Length: 287
Image (cartoon, rainbow, N blue to C red; front, side, top):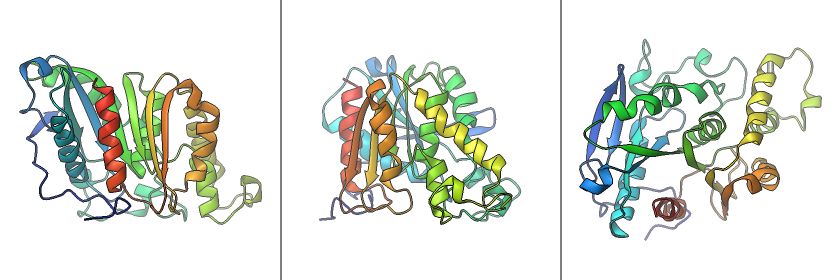
């Protein structure tokens, strides 16, 4: 039996849910669990968007979708339906227009030496908020009726999920897995500096124009109010350390309904235990 600290891998025993792909203005959105909805659930369906991490594709959502939907069915029928939706992030998968699959030029990420999963947070108003959430109901009319949106993401997807909470009022809640509400300090530490004041002026490592964008992003998260939020971090995560989440929880959790879990002996992964927490949390949302 796999340790609950290990990276989640979909068990062979988990039944696979149905998959429906729709095209919204040339943008492919993949929907899981539509065929399994009862007639009543089709009239009141929660749509959970899963946002994948850097260098990955929408297919990373499939294990999450299958396990989550199976977990909901195992708990018994709910009057509310659940559909898991996903798509390729910008410059990933089928959206790498003009690029060879799997190749990401430096300009797609950053012009400076941050490495890993830190693109400028340009994703925050990507197709998710501007098109998919706005027009999804029109494209699935007669199939099911979306009545509530939840967003979840892992790593880069977790950072984006924080953004979406602050920017998209139609989102009722979110599950943030190894993502950070404080990218400014986290990235400064990655560069090897103790604080912003230690960074030399006019350095290409940390242009001031970039700093202002990250500051604006982090400050916007202070205004998140009235949301249901599950935050899942790993105590051994050195890529996105949980210490950068702690201050937000201490200052702003009281403005929301927050469950914050830091899993011991776990690094920068979606673990088996985290997946169990996701199922439990979503089940409470659907009550």
